[in-house]
Image 1 (cartoon, rainbow over the protein chains, first blue to last red):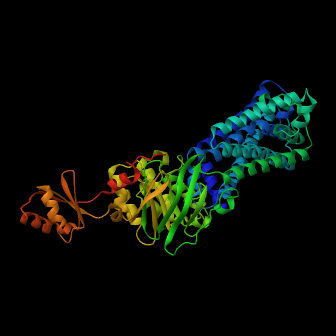
Image 2: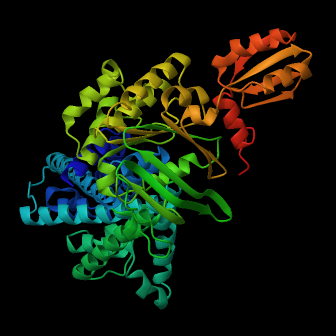
Image 3: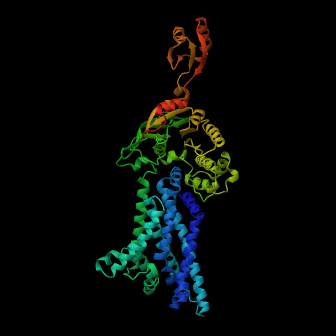
Amino acid sequence: MTNSVIAEILVLRKRASTWILLATWTALSLFFSYVLPYVEARSITELLPEGLAGTLVRGFPFFGGVFALMLGVLAAGSDYSWDTVKTLFTQGPGRLRVLSAKLMALASILVLFVVSVAVTSAVASYVVAQVENASLDWPSAWLLIRTLGAGWFVLLVWGALGVMLAVLSRGTSLAIGIGILYALVIEGLLSALASQLDAFENVSEFFLRTNSYSLANALGASTETIADSGPGAFAGPYVSSGQALLVLAAYVVCFVLAAAVALRRRDVS
Amino acid sequence: MALQSEITTRPVVEPDRPAEDLVIETRDLTKRYGDLVAVDRLTLRVRRGEVYGFLGPNGAGKTTTLRMLLGLVRPSSGRASVLGDAPGSSNGLARTGAMIESAALYPFLSGRDNLRVLARHAGAPEDRIEPALAEVDLSDRAGDRFSSYSQGMKQRLGVAAALLKDPELLILDEPTNGLDPAGMAEMRSFIRSLGRGRRTVLLSSHLMTEVEQICDRVGVIRNGKLVGEGTVDELRGRAGLRVRAEPLESAERVVAALDFVESASTTDGALRITTDPAFAPSINRALVRAGVDVIELTSERASLEEVFLELTGNGRDQS
């Protein structure tokens, strides 16, 4: 298994689109989390080192999620586009081992996505503190570790969704289209309806964005800022961090199981 | 992952008890796509150490059969055994190298990195990569991206990938596709060398010369059914003689009376004689002695192409 994971990491590592996604996600995260709020002169506290955890984690649930979704789709779906799926499946490791290797490689690369944004955010908050002559009160190491862990976990859920969509659609285009449609339109519209209709409120408690933002909120992201964060804006309802973790874990299991069943049963023709 | 374990509602594909020298054995192997029967009760036997040519027109079911043997496609019914295991089993695939249709590798990776990825997945030692590249004469371009390779180089890298596991069985589907004449000749010679010794090669093709030059035995498939099987010589049938003479009726009478002639018949203004071509001088002498003018006497034998066209209905598949 380790050999297969190393092989899949090599594939992701050597692929230009991985680095393009990483660079774009880091740049956009920096712009929307620090540059734009600073220019608009919003609450400066969130931009200082003391607000690093909250500012950092609120970028993962939607914005980072879409990037992770695309990476997941590319990691699994491109093998159908290039027909390398037949080459991989005739090497002998077994279809499920190939899928597991792809998921583990994806999870490893997502660590890089989290670290990249964390380092950039830390540098940005340091610069803001220097410019504003504010004190350098960094969050505790424990809070930062939990923040990075939660961010990685949220990205993993979206990445697994991408893998599942890629396997089900046997390609990349439809999978990315459906994934973004789901993230932007379906969850967005139903979340908006949830604030008006009680019936939707219960349903929305099981949405990816509800549980992801609930996790972010538990780690310091303010509800006001989340409600004012563009296309991924979320106004609640929030659930407990424990429930959020459980629901997100259930999503990962469901996405992986669906991908595994489809991959195992289908012909490669 | 054994194919057997995947099948719950369809007829189970079980490995047959392989005869001692059989590397591939199928019995009534069938694949249906809705109403279309792509492979129809195919019974195939490939012996250890031989280069077996799987010949058929486009759409005859060759690739579907090979995909079933590799576990990529599940049969609708029938039985199959590859190296004594169910098709697609990890044990069988570990000893099988394959290239189906064309070399499908990562375009952004170099040739060497592509082999590295596959070697890792296959559990093959990385020290096999350089010899495999050298074997297909790609060492100099191994650091270049796969997408920058010519079609011939891609095919050669595909063969190198199939050789990484030092497989007992090599399944190659149209390996000379897209190659120029020199590349085709080189690939043929290469495949012939691969087939020496204990390694078995199953080669799918629709090119007669390729199969004629490389293969020990040939199976011809049409509309998913095996319509002919044997060595090239067996398929081409016995050689005979063709005589143009005057008067033809006298010639037929004289020749039919000879002991060593099995049969003689007149078609298209010529006498066709079934006999060993070595008797040509004796036949000529007998005709001249009988006062028959011999205009032309030639040895003739059906080419593999003629046999193929006859077996496959002019090479056009009906599916």
